[in-house]
Each structure stands twice: as C-alpha cells, then as structure tokens.
Length: 476
Image: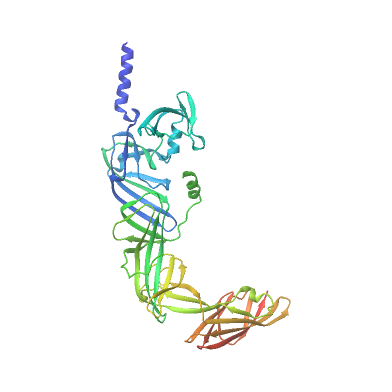
C-alpha cells in the first residue's frame, strides 16, 4: 500500500510541475471582434498579404486556439503567428486549417446512423408534429430514414438536428496548438497569403482639341474575392512581376472600367521596394467581400502628347512575288507620352488599361480608343494604340523581284499614302525586312531601327498623296 501511495504521489507531482503533459486546456476562440488592426498588401498577380493583429486570451500551458474570420482562399502553408507582447513566450506546436464547412448535405452525412427529429405540418390542425427518425444513408443527396421500424425516403419533414458535429465549422478556421508560457492576454500578429484578391490600374486620358495635350487620371481598381472582408484596413499595393512557383497553383486545387469623372486628388504615396514599387494609401479603408473598389492613384493636367500615324509592313511581303497591289492597308494611330516630371508626371506607372476620350463638336466627351500598358518607370515613354486612321489610305505595290545570285535578291516597292484629312500629316512607314538586307535606293531618307527594321518618315499634305519608293537587296 505504501509503495502504491508513493507511485501516486510521484505521478501527481509530475503532472503538477509538467503542465504540458497534463493535457491541453479548453480551446480558445478568436474572431474579427478581437481584431485591433489589419493591413492588406495586394499584388497585381491575384494574391494578397494579410497582417491581422488581435488581442487574444490564452491559458498558460498547452492550448488550442481557433482563429476565425480568415480568407477562405488562404494559402495555408504561408501562415505565421507570433506574439507581439511576448515573442519568446508563445510557441506553435501544430497548425491546422479546417475547411470542412457546414452545409445541409454535409450535416446530414455526419448524422448517418444517428437519430434526428422530423417536423411536419398537419394540414388539418395547422400544427407542427414532430417524430423521431434514424438517417440510414444520404446517397445522391436523398436521405433514407427508419421511422417506427419502417424504411422511407423523400419525407417532407423539416430535419431538426440536436447539435452541430464537432468536425463541421461554419467558416474556414485556422487552428493552432500553442504552448503559452506568458500571460493570459496576448497581442498576436497573424500573417498569411491569400488568393482571390487583385488590383489593377485604370487610366483615363482626356485629349485637348488639337491632340497635343491631355489630362491623365489614374485609378486603382481592387477586386476582392478572397472570401473575407478587411475592415478599416491599412492598404498597400505592390506593382511588379513577382515570381511564383507552380506548387501554389497545385495547392489551390487541393485545398479548396474607370468612368470619366472629375479629377480626384491622388491618395497613394509611392516608393521603391526591392525590385518593385509599392503604393501606400494614406488613410484606412474597408474592402468588403465580393467588392470592386476604385481609389484615385494619380491626376496630371496638361500632359504633352505626341500623335503618330504608323503604316507597318508584314514580313511576308519580302519573301515572294506579288502580282497585284495590296490595297486598303490600315494606318495605325498612336499616342506617345513621356513619363517625366517636366510633363507633370514622373511617377512609376503600374500596368493597366488607358482609355482615351475627347470632346466632340458639341463639347460632349466621346470614347476614342483604349490600350494596355506595361509597368512603366519614370522617364520612360508610354505608347498607346488608339485605332486606325479613317481618312488615311495606303496602297502597296511590288515593282521589282530580281534574283541576283544563288542566295541574293533585289526587291522594290512603291507605297502610296493618301491623306484626306484637313491638315498635313507625317506617316511613319515601318518595314520589317528580314535576313541580311541593305536599302540601295529610296525616295525618302530611312533609319535602320534595328537588325530587321527600317523606317521612313513621309510627310503628306492635306487632301494630297505621297509615294515612297525604295529598292532593297536581301540575302537569304
């Protein structure tokens, strides 16, 4: 008896002084109501970084913490929790992500083999009558019941469940097994990546009457389908081409336009960040779930523009004979903006879509075209393709195709450019010559743009015509 008492005393003392072995305390739960701050950094690659700061009550020792109100598209392997108030006092032993969400079918599935109640309205008494039934199966979403030792299905009764099974949850939840060696009140920061949240830049360019100046407004468009809302959040946007591994897409499969408006003052502060640029909203904002939100990014007035007419050839023109003239070729219309401080710009421009408007004769703004731009650093140029010129026509005719030697040919073209506009224009003719080439004669000076491109600037008078002729020697 004394030996048994001694063993019991040793076990009791071991449990007393080793609380980690005494079993985990009752699970604690934290929701968005405990949130003291949240910051969202959104990348323009359909991903966001969430920093969620909360005041959490924890028992000392080992305890389970149920962390609720997280994004349903969370990348679970990206999660990290730390204590701000006691960094050394909180140790993460295990981390789980529960996403077996509560639904009528799953609830019935969990009660297969168990007893539930069925409530049916009596049509004669207009009162609800309740009977007891056992769910035998729920195959194909149709419950099969045993009622009074008889088997039936398609019962019209409303199912009443005694409780929610412990392994079903209403919302996606992070669950940690923590070893808390600090006080009962902890200020924690949880950091995770989520899919389903994205941003893009949308720009509105309003041209002046002569197409030489414009007002450029930029908007940030945020689209939140991450599965949660971010209330009164600090917001940062990162522009750049971030490398992502394919594993993220595999885990996803396993785990689960700007309107024309008055100029708004820019609300973002821009700064270089690593090899990207980061834009910080200088106030808090709320991003609701399944919401598209627009915030002003920039506003610049009297931005100088350069309008260009470009006629571009095709590589196939230089590889074979052409008997008939190529008529009704299109001449493209482009606008060029130099993104520099002297032009009231000079801010790194995130990639996005620029939509261009201009007043008509009734002083009503009309849409004239749009184009997408890539990330553009300061002091670089932005070129916008607007469309094709209606009042400029082009015709191409091959005037010579001669074989000079086994691998050398001479080819000649006549390009007719006709201007039906009310003002003079200059048309840039871009010829994508291939292989080893040399222009041996031409009616207008040319510039060798690169190894495979020659360009000619051809002035054409209003209601006039100009003809560009040139001869080139090509070695294939």
